[in-house]
Length: 377
Picture 1: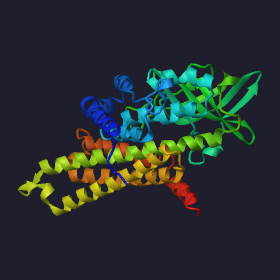
Picture 2 (picture 1 turned 45 degrees about the horizontal axis):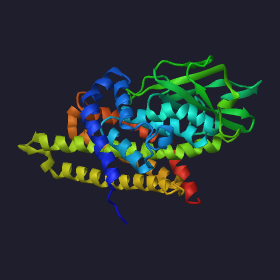
Picture 3 (picture 1 turned 180 degrees about the vertical axis):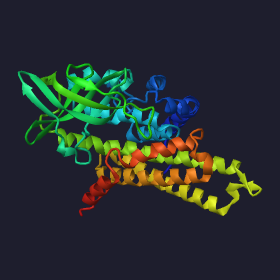
Picture 4 (picture 1 turned 135 degrees about the horizontal axis):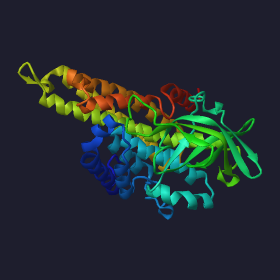
């Protein structure tokens, strides 16, 4: 076994780390405070080729593997989760469904703009009454004279309402026992997007509620075979869990970095608090758990790149890193003491941003269900 990253992967890590530190870090607090979407940073990430990393070059993407993508997500989240989820949701949830399940005409229509980052895409799965039970979707689409007429709503959807969003792919019931996926272009009559939702964290990320009332899209907006939507979104969620798991490692690493730096600077009782065993042990636990979580994420990404079944590994990585990031963010804020409770310190933002990593892309409880099923239980 070789745990060293290859030259190309090291280049991805160093490039994205430099971008995150030099371009994202200086504005992260301001973007969070103002709940302002990072259009300039998205454009710069597009120039770096991050918005369509694993899409083949023929369609405008970077042709990278999943491990490279996970490295990029980790490095972005190490500094700011809002920027990271904007990139990750666009790539894994918005763009990959069209690449995986679209026909050639759909790919040629949508992927060049999406993979290049000129436009963003979203994925509409969650509904007010269909969260963990995603199969309980109530949004309906009826085929009438060559048009899919959609009625229903989606909630907590990332990237759907920005000025550069091109489309959303939604799940809808196309029959009593049938779920399909449909591409709905932004601006389609009958498709309404709410104002940005107010959230505990991810303040600079775009999160909206979507509603569809007599919203008609052409029959050719069906993504893949009719009735295959359930299978399709389960596959998408498996890959998305690698994204969120990478975010968990990145956030934990960022919180550790802040805590370690603060522990060396902060003096109490005549010496830096890093000299006290209580603080040392917390930092030691953080560093150890982060390495364990990173190994789980990289393994899941490697399995996906090998074309092997990665469902169990992705769920394990997502579960572990979600809980890991919770512990590390909590410990890191504790090391900061009262200062960590102040928004002028970055750890308070990381602490707020962390909680969604235990909810999005399947709650911790759902991950345990997936893992138990994968173990044959």
